Amino acid sequence: MVADSSTEAREYLIGLLQMEADFYVKGDARDGQEAVDLVRSLAPDLVLIDRNLSGKDIYTVAETIAVNYPGTGIIVIFSDLDPREVRALTTYMDSFLVKPVTREDLAAEVRKVNDSIQKKKTARGGGEGGPQKSQIITVYSASGGSGKSMLACNLAVALMMESKQKTCLVDLNLQFGDIDLMLNLTPENTIVGLAQKQHSGELEADVVEHYLTEHEESGLKVLVAPATPEHSETITLYTVSQTLEALQQSYQYIIVDTPPALQDTTFAALDVSTSILVITTLDLLALHKAKTAMERLRQLYPGDKIKLVLNRANSQVGITHEQVEAHLETRISAFIPSDGHVVVRSVNEGRPFVLSDPTSPIAHRLNALAYEVMGREPPSSAQVGGESGGAGGGDNFMQKLAGMFSGGAKK
Ligand SMILES: Nc1ncnc2c1ncn2[C@@H]1O[C@H](COP(=O)(O)OP(=O)(O)O)[C@@H](O)[C@H]1O
Ligand SMILES: [Mg+2]
Image 1 (tube, rainbow, N blue to C red):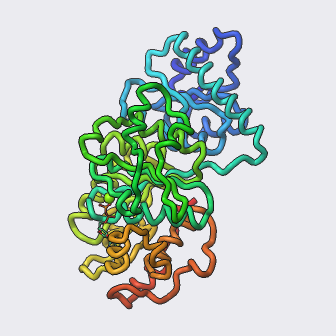
Image 2 (cartoon, rainbow, N blue to C red):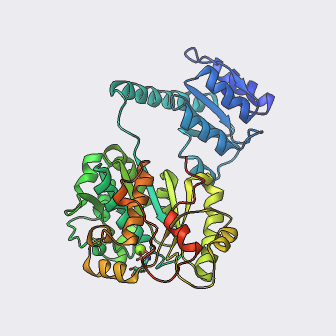
Image 3 (tube, rainbow, N blue to C red):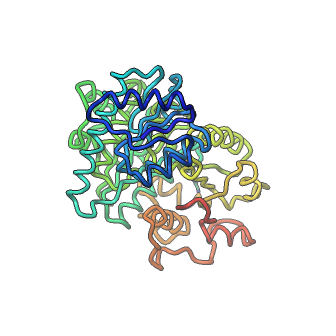
């Protein structure tokens, strides 16, 4: 199927496709809505979508088709090569072409994508019902010290313990990663080994497995960051994207911790993430950075993939959570209270507080967040009670905290 708003371009592409004896053009669409409708009714093996298709933005069109009609391959045709745009669309498209499109390139790309789509269909048909698609959750904040690693560690351990499904934590804070300390690990291998291995070809799932370290108490697997900053230079965005692709084959939940910089390796994770948890705290500098980061992320990714998390939410610092929402133009999806006693002791002991202090309010919050990710209701013991615990508060705000989720973006 062809979707292009320009009549000449549509006819040109259809002409090229019809030159191939084994291709059949089922239909063509002039705008985004028609493209989605036609994919639904014709169920083509493949759709060629022009980047500048009118009516609906390309992200919405590509996402709708990718999510609802996974049997239809998507090739996007760009007028010129903008790496950022290509990156933003990688989650949804199977491949892309840049104009001018030649007969040879088009035929080769269509055959390639079609082959891989057919393979996936056969694989899916084989396993009745099949395993649930794995989720990649990246924790991000433009500020250091905002609680990314705290959240990543505790969420990963909670997911592993509560879901009993394979869970992996990836430390992409390549220069100053501290997940190994937070979990008291003594890793034999780190992501540096994977980067070296990668030079000799694609990373297979069993190879990646070899570089993970087990957190024995929970069974969580961890890909540890380099021991020293200079080692981080060997790690490219390809290492990251191939690693995550390999992990997706065997892990149900993949949690990614990141540094504050929006660097290539971070984007490699954000691109393939199912959700991005953006953390902020209640101070002006953090909010300022969060706003800039949010704007950037919203340019690149669909809004419902980005979730705002307020850490140390009960700090009494003269900024309300309504002001935070207004400033960042986003609803807060999750609130995490401040609890220096529990958190700092847990970090110092190298034991996540969901294990060391499971009855603390902050551990309840993290468990509830894990259930939210799992798409299940928490058992009553993991439910957050009305009592606030922790420091300060006692007002309406604390009741909101107990609610944890303000609803909204969740599908
Ligand atoms: N909710 C919280 N309550 C108390 N202390 C916290 C909380 N969140 C984070 N901290 C503390 O703040 C520090 C920075 O947290 P960390 O997770 O390492 O931040 P980041 O990874 O964003 O740099 C740590 O010492 C941690 O113990
Ligand atoms: Mg950190």
